Length: 409
Image 1 (cartoon, helix red, strand yellow):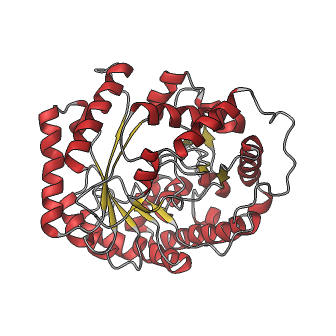
Image 2 (image 1 turned 180 degrees about the vertical axis):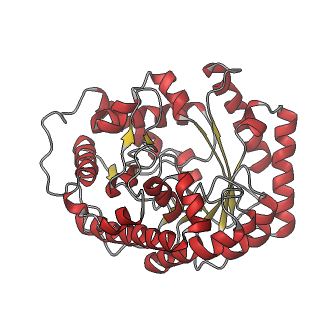
């Protein structure tokens, strides 16, 4: 079990505001609502994937009902609630307040299969785990944090030889994560809600890109394979050490399961031969260490790698991204893993008619029924777009919820 506080003193600034207790009470009301309890029945696991958006692992299909999980991008939430994004990722109190407001608003306005649990995931920004290895995040009031790609840590082989496994327990990044964990749990008080300690989700290739630079690593795949092997080994050794450190800090059991997210591992960035020779072996090492992958994620097209990926022991859920062939993923993983089928934000939402959206859902459901996919869910995230106002975006997503409910539930 995760302990409420882990030994660090909570700052005096973390004093309960008048608004947070009200938001907590409203969230708990949602937690015990009939609709939320009904949504929970769609999932085997609702807690192990600690990301910015809810990712439940769907159960085997029952009564031909397919869960759908829609969401609004942070760019829309920013404008809707006038959120200072940099402050949200640096101030635990502000993070909790924004998170609760967003979740409550969504539940009250959209009728989909998002499940609300008692664990609050602490998400400290895209690429945050790279800072454990020395990378730097760029913060902005109006956009998600991003890794500073101009700051290259491994310029050559000598730089890599000088690198040592991080001292995670004495790092500024871990102190930041611990402070968030302590502060949010303090703010939650005696309620039944609790924070979930941040997790490491990026796979080895994504982390190597941060350390070495995308262009450099792409050339290394062809011209300097020994460097790639050493860098990959350093990254996975660091991740495994971090997981053991995380378990000690939160007084949890040995790490089980892991998220593997490698958005850069897709064609045409990586060839099947490069994947098989220089990437896949290190994913398998991580898989053996964690026992299984809770979630295997790549946004880009991964079709040429699917046969190899299917040999990984124990993938609980695989992401079928907007650019991958959902049919091929369904054929290969129909009985091996639950599938998260992510629709295309532009083609299936922004520039999509109701008639075309109905046809899209029917085509997916019909094909997956035919080939016997045992468990899957359908996901869509809507982002801001010049052709739509915030209110138009919200109203259209409400309509997409109604259409999806009629076809999938």
